Image (cartoon, rainbow, N blue to C red; front, side, top):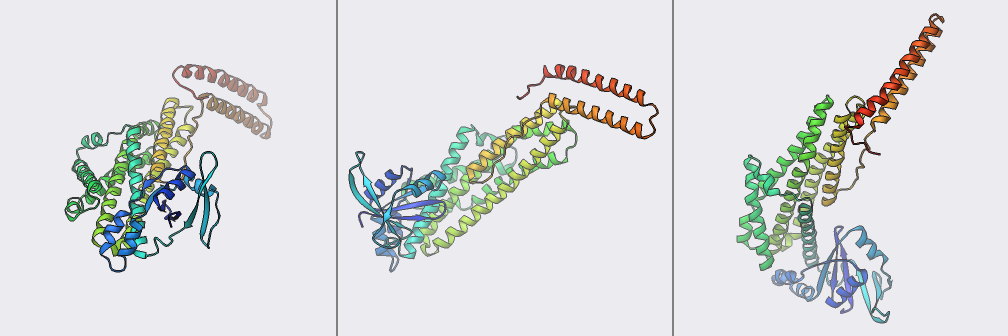
Length: 418
């Protein structure tokens, strides 16, 4: 078994389990990053369970790594050259050195094999995989907040609402519990007692942030004057990223609580771990759907506002420019946030109509309207045809001369996109 590894895919990541050296060689061959899958915890937790102790100890003797499923990692797994293995469900990979010399043959079991044959051991491994997936997201959120330079604590402190003030204290409690878990290797009853009441505060803060985004969307929907739409769009451009940062922090803390919760169940009631893991993942998906409804509604309202602005760019060029720039900034911000949390979908930026394009359109419509008037006059009997042509010609000529001058004056104030 020293040269055999097992691959377990749960949809979020792949666990690579087997002899430490074999696991490392396989991952090096794929060229993909991984995190440690601490199987020793299973040995400790399942050591007292009847009929599971031996299986748990055998698994604990092996090494485990976890790989996040991305397009790149999935492609690397599929592209690895494998041969037919010794039996059904088993494949082989040839391990080579840098000079091409063969140094060994690795047998790969796709799916739970002999090491994870016991249902309790498999459930424990699945629970740890779920924790690693959430910890990966937590790390990515930390990086996201650093990149956008969003100081969530400052945002929370600037609000007078007590819900947000309480959130700061909750952050400290959860982070402390995660540090203790990292050092101790488990979540004791004492540690869990400190954090189990914090979920309500995090949920209230999430609800508050979602209401802020919904409020912006509702206000945009109600506005009819382009000036008011521009003002609300500026507010969205300034504040949406802040509220998304608060939502990201809430999601991060909720994942942290779920990691602690699964540890506590694994320690206290391992037989319930698999059902509890499934329930935690359902609740997580529900949170994502709730956030997704608010962000998609906001994007829809910003799109509608940009459409209104483009339609009125000739009359209100500055306001139109403000609205569409704000829309594109908000879309970019929301899409980055949704990608962080694993949403699918993409919004493309709306190109603002240039003032000249709108002016030319208006001129053409005026000329077309004049021509239609002439046809109507002829059908009425032909009387006054010459005067109609003359009037139409003078009017259209005047518009054609004035519009470029108007464009030239406004171009001093506008920054036009090519």
